[in-house]
Length: 524
Ligand SMILES: [Zn+2]
Image 1 (cartoon, rainbow, N blue to C red):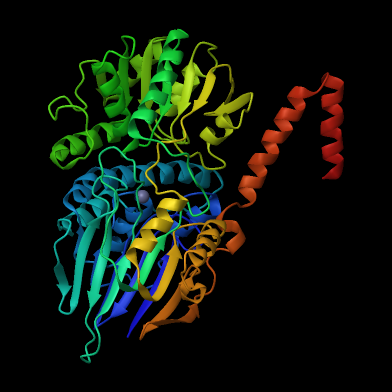
Image 2 (cartoon, rainbow, N blue to C red; image 1 turned 90 degrees about the vertical axis):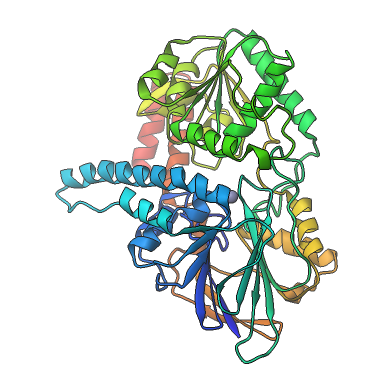
């Protein structure tokens, strides 16, 4: 008998954290940070709803929404081994320290505000020291080889094809009373079929319990090949560069930046782009690119020699601030890739500030833009955006490439689940909002999955796993109302301000503007 609990990424896509209690051991799968609106981010500051002193932890991949609270776990008493693949450990050595620095600077900024109000300063969620202590606990395991963290518990990683080092975790848990061995599979995040660097996700079939992500359970992408995608990128870059301005690309530091560098490197090597300098302006992305170079021998679908990968003479991988500022003086003809991918933080905001008002510039988005982020407002067609407290007219060409994704889409998720069958116990759908996982459950039923065997766990809900069945043991008092997992009042407020600004801009004259404000004041 075992217990399975969901402490994050249930009805939402961030804060991945599950716990299994079985065979005299208690262990966690992932311990990620909550991301999104202020209400959900506040969960990062609250105590864990469980005792952090678990025996060990299995980490599926390095993304912060799966790994970002590991240092907090260690700070509050976890001291067991953390199992992950070798590339994941290499990525974490930069990502966790980067995350700790972000926690520190966020807290400092927040404390300055608290100080002005005469309030006590707060501590950051964790420090760089906690991050370093976490790195000491990492134990690397290759794909496709069994290991036994505790007697009677066997684990094996499968390549999940999502980002460098990403894994699905297969578990065999022996019954201490000599009964049947329980077979479980945690999908982690699953990659798409067509993805540079990584093979299609794979794993064993035939399980008692499968815990599967459902991020894109309600979204289907157009079919494409790597060549088609690169051709679309080429067209955008040629169009942008021939307009005379810069092409600014917000990109995640991990994986998306390297995919773009690979594709641009191939286009440059084939003479398919005009002469240009390509800046990758993100210290984290630069460090992560070095990790990719270290593991180049394991990468799939790479169309450049290992020695040439990410090392085109036209690339500038920028580390220091002065060099980053120097890019501001370039008014045209450069490709500038910088983090973050949704333009809500980091150096990319400076590059957007310097280019978004230029009619000959291009801002090219190559990823999902979450509601409320700067990238979301720009791609929604806002005529004016606020960056660092100042307003900027959007005159640049705003373009989007929809087919760079690290996630399997709807039919790829359904295929993956089908290929894992039979699932004799239960299929748990996590890591997706309710619309996505309800749609996925509905479609799985049409593919012959017993709907009674599909479970949509709630946050902080636990299940008793016994003899191919799963009974809910209930959930802890709610930390966040379900409705606020997606949007909270801060989002409503931001949306209202945007509507108001637009309405005032569109007004015929100042008289009408005063009327609008008078009407609103009266309503208040
Ligand atoms: Zn991920």
